[in-house]
Image (cartoon, rainbow, N blue to C red; front, side, top):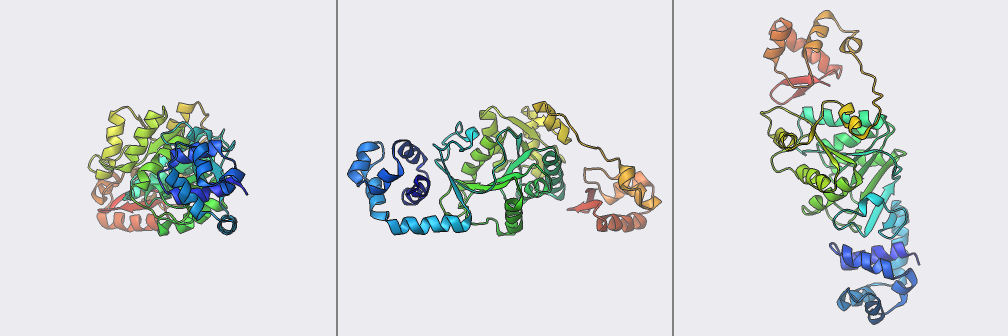
Length: 364
């Protein structure tokens, strides 16, 4: 019997929060001993684990359960990595309470690849979603792997951008790997697995629900896998700030995207910048920190807008990446409000401009 499959069953019995006991046990027990020994013998080999836990394991385990678990893992396409395995991600071995068992679907990118975590608010603005998507895609085009948590808002847009380029992405779940949470990101979940360098991972047992306390724990894995963490949007008490703090504790680089000073979703980013996080305005700001050559091909606005009418071009060139109101665009272009409104709608239909709350417009 395979040790890896046996430890998923042991994970079920002992439940969440038993990492230390699991790591200790897998360092001293082989599969045959775990499957065939009684509680007293197991307790003798790993006395740090209470006898009651070993008794619970012996009461639960059976060859039939093993066979069902083996088939389930095979049907789900899930691979098991134990802390003691050679291919267990080395960057996770140094984090606080490293996962004893990792459930993996898809293909983990090469360890040598630069990995950047991109995290942020679930209640992201259109500006934040656009920045997360474009940053992730640009970094992925340079071969970077994007790490995030598959949540709504910033996370989902970061994964979406990453899978549209070669670098790929890893999604770290706050639930069992056999669940898609939130359901709204089901298509992204599938697209990650379809990417040659896309993977879904979880430390939680199969079937585990997405409980609120799982997500702060998940953040330590995102920080551990990433060489640098970019926070795109974060409210005052955002969980993304936990990820940034964990990254700093691990000696990782922390980056932040500035936003509108009036936006509550940018308060956390501005605080990070005040505390020393590097302000990021373009992907090269991140790559330069790691000594990686920036190969991006800048596209000039006139090249993008070459097919536009004179009025459309005038409005497009007046708009920046920071959301602007219609009145401000009218002042910059010296065009009447009716004309600007018509042109903005035309540019939206061509996906050149996006509209945020309060009829604020920015470049897509």
